[in-house]
Length: 180
Image (cartoon, rainbow, N blue to C red):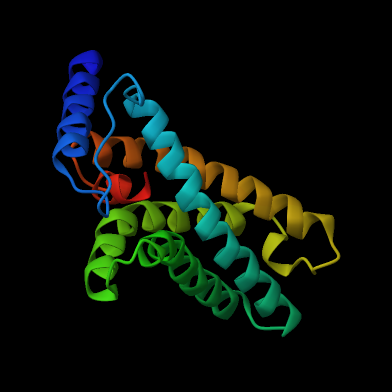
């Protein structure tokens, strides 16, 4: 059953690649660009999303901790910045490709929202569950190790979400053609 879904996703990507104008460049034949497996595309999307989330999450935790904010204020800032940087990781290449913001912004929201939300729920739940993590200072190894562990779990949780979305032509499948 998985193989049938991967074939369907590959067929969808191949169909999209052959019928989509890439900024004036024509899609190359399959021999030049072999089909990428669903798992590879989902892993790439997860790493892409995790990178954006991690930038915002780490920055938010550093700022909140350095300013001595309480735990909830720090989490709110970290989550907000994770969404901003996560969307930014999708928007930047689309903008560089010449896509208008009015087109790129809805694509970023559609492709990233569920993945970022999953990552942020898991990431912050793990941080809150590690004893002392929220009270650790910037120079404390507990701060950095718990942040690392939480981001690893967030990525693991987001992979099946991204895979499920891409398999259905959603999520990063919506912007994948624009990143080629």
